[in-house]
Image 1: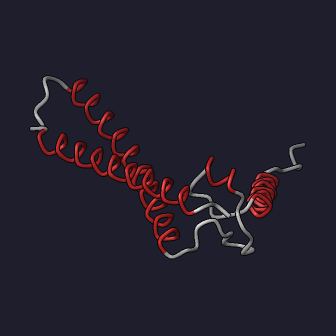
Image 2: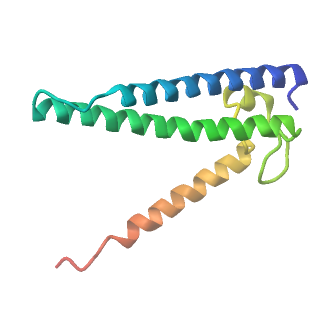
Length: 133
């Protein structure tokens, strides 16, 4: 199990990351509100719209990351941090230090990935037709 001092350090890093993400989101909103919508030509407009799309896609990924961070902070506060969601075993300290938002131990994570690969292969095989004569 991870020592309390390291858990507090991880929690503090997660809080700082959350603050950084909130700041980025606020900057994006401010930038988009200040845009007056007038463009010199259609090509400029297309470029600006494309940039907005990329920016919003990035912010959406950051929103998902913020949810994961918030969930991890709650797990720390409730004393559930470092316990596998699937089997209830302790998640090794090295794993948590490398990937602080881990919810699964290595064994359960590997099983999850094997199942995911298996499902992907099954889906891929459904689309293959052998009647191409």
